[in-house]
Every structure is written in C-alpha cells, then in structure tokens.
Length: 381
Length: 225
Image 1 (tube, chains in turn brown, blue):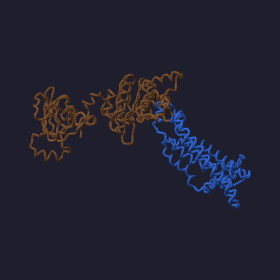
Image 2 (cartoon, helix red, strand yellow):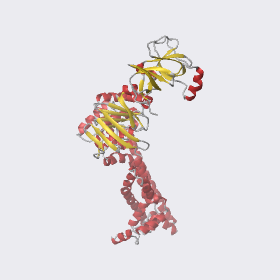
Image 3 (cartoon, rainbow over the protein chains, first blue to last red):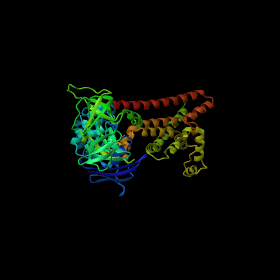
C-alpha cells in the first residue's frame, strides 16, 4: 500500500501529487516531458525532498512534513531503475549487481548475486565492465542490481527510452516477466502511453505538476476525464456539443462544428458536453456499400487525405454538410484550422478479396456505435 | 658536477612534494565541496582560489610577505612560537603551496563534477551513505583527474621562482631552489652550471610526467580485460 500526498514548488509550476495504490499493483505515470513525473518518482525514492505532505509505503512513513520525518534515500530500501542505467563504470557486472547487498553473510550474498545473474541471462559477463557490453545487457544488469536487493517498491524512470525499438520490446518482456514473478508494487514513469499500457494496469496522466486522471487502462482510454487526457491518449476526434433531447438510455446531441445530430449515451446530466471518438472506433466504408440501418450514428463524407501505416491506413474525412457547399466553403472553412472533420484508422482486411485502399476524393460512409463515444463535461472557458 | 648543485634539486623536490601533500589535504575537501554544493557563493570561492593563477608571482609573493611577515599578526604569532615564516623553508613551502594549489583544486573539481549525478543517486538508493559514496563511487571514478591535478600542482610548485624568491629569498640549503639557483648561476656568468641545472630540471619534469602517464595507461588497460 502506497499513500502519498506531496507538493513541491518547481521553477515553472508547483507539483501537487496525490496517489493511493494498493500493494502489488502497478502504476504508470505518463505525461509530456517536464510535467513533474520524474520529480515525483525521485521524491518517493528520497532523492528529492518535497516541501509539504507525506509519503507512506506499507507501514513505513518515508516522509511527513507535519512530524518532520524525512527518511534519507539510503534507508528507504526502494528499487530504482534509472533512464541511463547508472551502472558504476569502475566495477564489473558482478560487482555492480552486488553493490546494494551490504548486509548478511558473504556466502548468502554471493548466492543471491549468482541466482539473479542466471535469471537475467548475464552468465559469462560477470567479469566484464559495463561500458563493454550492449545496451540491452546494461539494462539487464541495472535490473539485476535493483532486484537483488528485494525491494518492496520498484520505481522505473523511463527505463527503455535509450534502447532501440527491438531491444526495447525484448526488455519490456523481461520486465513483464520480472513483474509477474515479483510481488512488490511498481511505479513506472514514461512519456509513452504504449509503454505504460504494456507494463502497468493503472495509469495516471500528469500535466503541469498535477495528476489529471488516475484510473485503469480502460478508464483512461475510454472514459477520459477531460480534453487533455483525451488528447494525450490518442482520442483524435473531439467536439463540443449541446444536448437537445434525452430519451432514457440515449440522448441527442447537436454538434455545431459538424452540423450534425449524434446519438450519445445519456450518462451525464450536463447539457454542454464534449465528446471524443478514437480513430480506430470509426467504421469507414466505401459509399457504394449499403448503409447500416441499425447504427445510430451514420455520417456521409469525403476522404481528403490518407496516410499509410504498416497494418492499415489513417484517413481524414470531411463530412457532407446538410447546408449548401458554398456556405461551407465561405464560412466554416475560413475559421477552421484544419480541412477535415474526422480522423479514422482503417485496418487492412487481410484475406478479404474485395479489399481496396481509400484514395483522396473517395466518398465514404462513417458509422460508429454509441458505446464508442467518450463523454465529459465541457471545459469552462 | 658539484655536490652543491644537487642541494637545490633536493630542496626543490622536497618543497614541491611537501606542498603537493599539503595541497591534497586542503584542496581535496575544497574541490569536493565546490563540486557538490548548490551554495550560491561557490563561484566566488572558486574565483578567490584562482587568484594565485592570475596574479604575477612577484605580486603574490609580495602580498604573502606582507601577510606572513613580522608586521602582521600571523607572522608575529609564528615568531613568538619560535617558527618564523619568512626567509625559511617553511615560508618557501607556503609560497609553493599557495602558488600551485589552484591547479589541483580546479582539476579535481572538474573530475568530481564529471561523475554523473545518477551514479551518486544509484548508490544512494542502493543503501550507501554519503560518506561511503565518497570512497566507493567518487574516488574510484575521479582519481585519475585528482592524480592529474596533483601532477600539475607538483610541476607548478617545482618550477616556482618569483613567489618563493619574494617570500623566502635564496638562502643556500634552506630556500635556494632550482629555479633560483639557475638564475643565480646565470647572473654570475656561469652558463655551464646554469645549463646543467636547467637540464636536470627539464629531465625531472619529463620523468614525472612519464611516470604518471604510464601509471594511468596501465590501469586503463587492466580495466578493458
């Protein structure tokens, strides 16, 4: 169990973080660089001192400004994996791994070091110096050095950002394996949502020193709390709208920007709402396909641009307005900064014979389920 | 070669070695402090320490003479303890130390600052105290820079002329160091002696450099294996 509420004045903003995490769970702190996520991790480890608040891990109080408690880093027994590994260049791989084992009988310590060397496939490298082994091996040594001390809490500060793509995937698997075997709590700091997703079940999105949403993977992706979280998590289609009618389960929303009525879940009592739809949740079909009658939300449009990806394509769609085209050209486009309304991800239909790529100017039909819509109250302007 | 010509060499080496040793004792803590503190006045302190590098040696010697001489309270105190400073070997050692210590502090500070801060952080989270970290991380990683600083300081102390002359004169067997002996030989028109002394100095300096070079290279090779 981790319970912390800390604040610290930084150069450009003040950091205010409040986290409660049950034992054995994993949390990713994600956010743009400079949002205070690494600082938060460093304060948990005792490498930085907060201005105010408390940090409790299990039954131990690491920090409490009211009781003037500050346990220094060397007494916290927390595992920390650094971005650039921070291996000691003057020590061999084996000596690096043994660095954190200062107590207990010598034979015991040797046994621990050897078993972790086996487990992380570092055999044969014991006498090498860190600067002469590969990046992936260095990261495994750093992981071994941390895990050999058996920490209750494992903190990872962007541990994979220095690795190339293939090694990164391997290392992530390594960490997942370690995680499954390891019973302690883990906090990961990363700027990559994908990485957070692969490694942690809980995600906290940070911005300007605050956690703007903390939730499960599903909550963060499908129920963003506000526009910032939605944008950060890849919800590319975000619009403001007004509820004009409510019927039990669903409601009707007027979206001025698109000139359309959309059917949305009737879950929020506010009338001014923002809605978000992820590109992969839009179903885009060629115009000649029969219109799906059972879909509540179906819009006609024209492709304006396509971007190929390895397993599909990203298409940008301009919707057909009910009003005349001249009106659209003169007013709507002039004050809008982009020339498309929707961004959709269309995966390849591997194995299907009628498969065809979208081209610019194609007419299309866009459908999406009510359940695909994320809603949150409009930001106050 | 006369025995009397070896005396200045012995004296010079003794002075320079003593000065370097004192420099290590005083300079390393200062370099450590400058390299680690976030104190705002650290650059001011650094500048103060660097003054001997920019002052003309004679000017430095003059000020040292004023500070250590009979008319100052330091000089007075030393005198009353029976250990006068000016025009003694002690004075020469002080002069050589003051002249050369900035070279050591600057180099050692750079070496200590060159240690990535995350190495220190890693040692902290792995349970090492600050004092332990100095011996287990800082010195093993910075010792080459520290050693290089000591060599520089030794070379500078060995070659000092102006400051030593001002503070302690050139008393044979006490403060007559090699550079002063060379100057005296030239002044007396004894170019042969000056030549010999200069050669000895140059040879000694090169020998010291070669020794340190060889030492660091050997360590470097050992590590690669």
